[in-house]
Length: 616
Image (cartoon, rainbow, N blue to C red):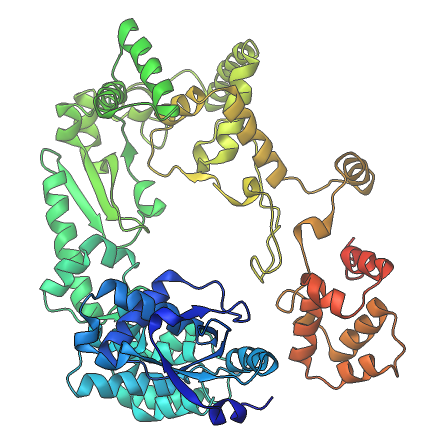
């Protein structure tokens, strides 16, 4: 049955009540929201295309093509009781009648299978023309039966230079690439980039970089700290990408100025009462700078026995997410009390460093005493004990040299450390908890155990393409504890219970497992029975596109038991490499494809177990 046969059949008119959805219509299930949109379109511009159906013995007509339009007509009458006053032509619906059931069935297949959506470039231009003639977004959405959000995005594309839409229509760029051009502020640059990228495989990220070489993303730490409202309020230009929900800031000099002004203002407020405060525009404070200073710490607070018990009780509730606002406020107050504070004397002799970290958060690093303030700090007993000794081993007030040599001091320190280790043996659970805490938190140089860990790579450059590990290996990496109170953090960690601690220990040990010797790795494999195909499936991106065409030809023949001159093998060999890679990916991932190819049980098992050589 040719498509033209549909248009030569007679059209008759029927009241909507005489029409129903035929079982032959392939569109039995539809999206209710899309039907609502199509109903609004019919109300706005009428029924632009007739229905097609087969009359039954009762004089009613089963609609075989146009099932969405039929539902939309019903919905339009439901929503608008006065619809016939607005659209009197809808009193009778045009239906092209099939002469027999065979023809109706053919129409049902052809009308739906032969549907071709409007090319995106044509749709974009159509929306643009309606907007130019005064139609607003809701009106355009009703006419085309789409969402208003879709119209807004298409109108953003309609504003692109004509050559870019021409390139989209000609297939020289993809729709995703065209979307990137909406962030360009310079038309000449945009057209230059268009010419340079024709025929090139340019990623969306790279394309946006080319179109806005000086732009700064709103995720930049300076932008996060300053805030978009403040930047825009100061006259800073902003470009919003409607398609990727991204924002780009165009004036880096203004952003730097606002960043410096806000940092200076915040530092002045934070530094009140301290001898000095110093800011840095970097996202860290250099160790070369702090290593020349003496570090002092806040005086820890003491909780009463009753407060300590209450703290533990509230911590357990917090771990169980059963702590209300009042309980959280009480817990915060106890934590503040336990953490303690710097004394007025410490503030009189020391200062702070203030900076904005990589996440855009204002950070204070405290507290330090400068070399010129050491003597006064020692006299005020702000610097005491070992900290009060000068860097050449003498005291600041030139006291007599200690009779304890550095070597002896080291020995005594090791003895004290041994005593701590001896005592720790009495509490194995504490040691296990502490190990789990260290592994799952980024403690840097402050780690409690003299153990070093190293990353054991387990993530390919193709990211998660065809690859899926247990969430415990991919979620919740070691937390960054820079500048955090470790004692408070460890107490909260332990309060979550033994099961949580053991889970953290297990997942972090698994993440650092690398096998050891061949014999040991074989023993572990025998116990755990690893299965690579359980977590990895070859795809075009992660394997097939990264090997040569002859390799793919041989693999296709091996998997399907084909001779090199078999028609299925020779037709595969004629494909482009990308097409071969896609075809093999489908073979591995799609059961329907394997069924269509008549895969045997033996071949199915071979495909399910196949691994590249050397991977086992």
